[in-house]
Image (cartoon, rainbow, N blue to C red; front, side):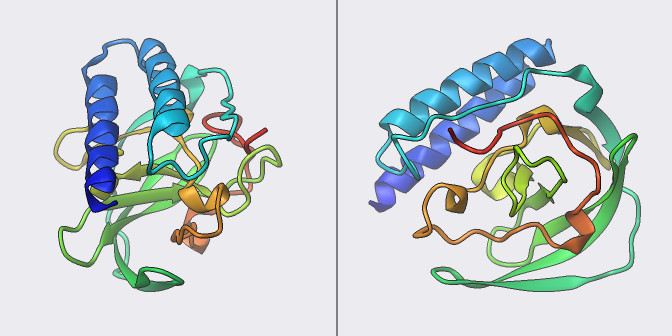
Length: 189
């Protein structure tokens, strides 16, 4: 089971490496969708191998390369049923034109990692929010220095959207917007 999870994470990291290495974001997105479908359907660590994953078509308006702006320090501790309390520290905010500002979090436990969730008002997306970046799990779209690639076309549902046995930190208030984001993974069919 543990080695299955390691393999899952390696494959996810490889999928995102390929995304970063592909020059055309729409082509990268098509490859990402296909790779996720294959991984979800066949891997023993899949949250639901029978799920029919659905995605909005790629739309370049939802891709941003943004600087992480300073924000007041904040710490949240999100209780989960299986992982205990998961601590995050706000490291800044990003502003996405036409969307709003989102908090950027750092996983404040062993290994760390950037976490950028998004909860929007689109009824076709998971109500608990989706993840755009979760570098501890390999979901990294790239960037340089204090800039991040934030492409909402790559927003994906956390595992708990498919199976209550999975414990997922959900998007906190600073990652909730009143905009319907018609991009990324939609609720499963």
